[in-house]
Image (tube, rainbow, N blue to C red; front, side, top):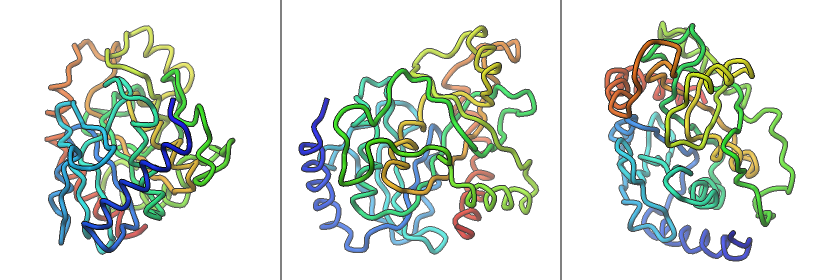
Amino acid sequence: MITEKKLITRLNETKKYLLDIFSEPPELGIILGSGLGRLAELVERQTIIPYKEIPHFPVSTVAGHSGRLVVGTLASKRVMILQGRFHYYEGYEMHEVTFPIRLMKALDVKGLIVTNAAGGINPDFAPGDLVLIKDHLNLMGNNPLRGSNISIQGPRFPDLSEAYDSKWLEKALGVMKELGLKAQQGVYAAVSGPSYETPAEIRFLRIIGADLVGMSTVPEVIVANHCGIKVLGISCVTNMAAGILPQKLSHAEVIATTEKVEKVFINYVQKVLEVL
């Protein structure tokens, strides 16, 4: 378990490294989930830095995660985009999974858009749908704030009563309506993975209020709230969860679905950026 002093030292070293590369700090962070990375290609005046070159950064090991930090301008916003994230199931500790969020705080980023590929539990959803996250269930068996509190970034006991900013959520729902998309929102359940859930587990998740299920996002959102960073969450439903339909689940299916919805997703996020 890392100490506050050691984590702050790492953050300062990483911050200095990045600010020596791009002088103008970003105002908004974006994390792109499995198969959703091509949005980063539209960034103007972009600076691309592979994760492996950034001090103290983990490296993405999962297919569909390019493993690059892209900094530049998108929809007139100065952004830093994580083209691929880090997962607890990859063997990383929670402080490593959420290191980029703490880095955003150190860079004075004010807002964060988190995206993911998720399994649909709500029968009203269908593969290819975009769903806004209104709340979450942390079922990962761990919390990224466990251990020394990073007091320079936030309080020991942060409030999560509005983990996903309500004003941003309303604006994002409005954009869905403008574009003729189904204006949908739901509760995202985060599990540790990497195995997909059993039908019995999905029945349990549905009973306790989950509409979506995945293996990421929630640690990042918890730390963003700790740091006082506003959050908007967007899930791409890539498949219906186990037992909802008579089907087998695979990561290849996840990537295939995100590729099909890619243009809609990219257009949607760009329009959302314009109203935030």
